[in-house]
View (cartoon, one colour):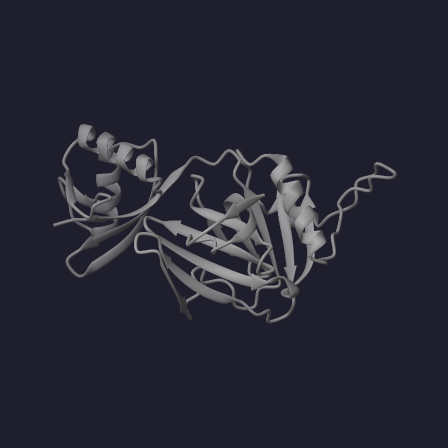
Length: 257
């Protein structure tokens, strides 16, 4: 459990438990949000305000979905890997935007997930580094707040309870290759590109050519200070990837002349 004092994006003078996430699955729509690096999505249990929160961190901005605990009607840890939270129909939630640089927060109507409408259940996949004890403490906190806990194992008999196999088989395996989710801008064009992190600068140029319909020799991206950096060869691309890794970015924008 963590205790925070003063202003921070988890809330002043709060007790909370945080789980770094890799994937979020929304039901019944089966939409997915996925990240390949930790510290980009978080699931928090906030004791002081009796809420859970889903935080999306990108650069110096944090978008929060906050859900009062009374809107949660079920909780289950599946196969010691996945956290399933079930909600009331049309459950109440609020959205906040935190400016981590200015230490400000404001209410917004924009859903940062884009998928919350009509959701009845969400399955969260923690990052691999998350310790099982953290998940256990999260479960203890949820139970302490009065949320029904649905165990997938009977600890008295040792028998495993049948869970929704369809949910498990539709969760992708853990051996995905990390990808960059890139937004490419060129004049009045905007295109989305997915590139595996291990791929080369030439691979990126080929993808851009396929998306935009014309060949290019260089790209530009913004560093953490907002400066435009030109990438012209593999050496520049390797330096850019180090920059992205240092900033913990898998989503970023590039600009093509």
